Image: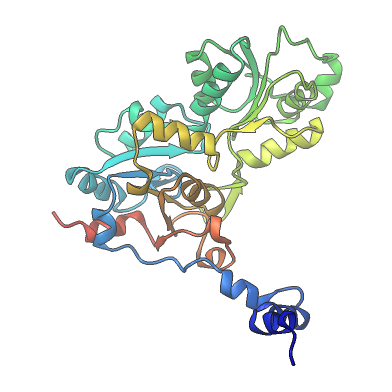
Length: 333
């Protein structure tokens, strides 16, 4: 007579799991197969009718560096014509909301205002102002978009002109001037005149754990309109963090859930009727999935089908298409 315990084990999948894992201990193929997320689908007209708002990443979705992705401005105009709301949310800290709206306008995107835009620069400045209202100065790695957003919050951005090297810091006898002079450290993306002095000073200031230390976004690379991916803000943040022997207190850009909540509240979004469109699984898609949005990956930027095949559930989109422009053919006027 078989024992009850034996029968339970016999009828469960656990023995099969153990067997297969002994056969393929490093891949656990069977367990991965039955727990894999549903494969992304091609978008259909039903998707268009099921959403009120599209939250769009910018670089790799709307444009590639300085050029609009073909057909995307026209697609967005058509989506607007049938009542869809468009919100541009970029992890780039190079732009303020105003300069992003201006850039989109120059690239052929019609009727875009700063109120339609959210950047990691504006998110960083808002976070610092809200959580550390006493801070009135911040040493930053980044460009004028971040400087401008800090200024709008009454925070002085420091570091412009620090483009020297190691020897300059030694000659100047560089030292930490104290919290009264440098209230916080923010690391975003800087693509011009970035050298040892700027990164070195940011690292030294960040070593003081009484200073807020903020990263704008975790993007390792960026599509630059050429055949290779170039280092982005996440790489510069990693440099400073490693040298400071300290993780940032917060990284405010996608996939931050705090940013998702800000956007939902600010624009009054219904998450289930919102579509997040991005070109990165680890930021855009994870951000949308965490927020409860529908998600779509476009293959015009960083990540491709091979990345999707190895993604876990949090990083797997509901839909996938070559370009956002493909939605034009699905619009039923």
